[in-house]
Image (tube, rainbow, N blue to C red; front, side, top):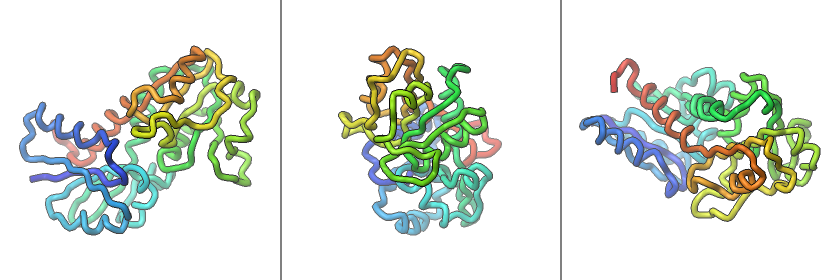
Length: 248
């Protein structure tokens, strides 16, 4: 049996297990299984890895950065972003990849327009690094926004956001867990009254499908998109990494 799974904490919101097990059922793949490994400490990964049938892992909050010291090799995207969300296990070696980049770019571009030339990236975790990588590749200027103080001019606190900053940055991407189930009433503390129909709000959260963040955008007439497509794309990219050359 080929085993795959997801590490993170908590995993009550997880999409991956149902997605892969449905895939196995629909495609009559009988020699594979996918499980959640809800570990409260990244060092418990060593226990997970004791299973000799384990061939691949996805990585989610809060371990996309913390997992890197456990890896034997990393691809160029992981090296650049400092975040890993996919591991291939081969001959007792852990090889790290970042499929968030692929998932975000393909999903994000569906509603992108040339007018979306400046962005605010909310949050500074592992997913935000993948988003920044894509925006940099596309030539889109961006600022990070979080609760934390930074000396970097490219990093603002929420309290520093003004009407001018919101107006000058038509693209706003939420990489925080604010609004994710079960805390569905939470949202990033933005001055939402300055949103316009010219804005594009992208939320990496997929549960609920319409977060409070996206609802604020819709109320202003902005384009909005959640993280559901991004997840499906990055999941399929993970499958290709685990099964190179496979027709599955």
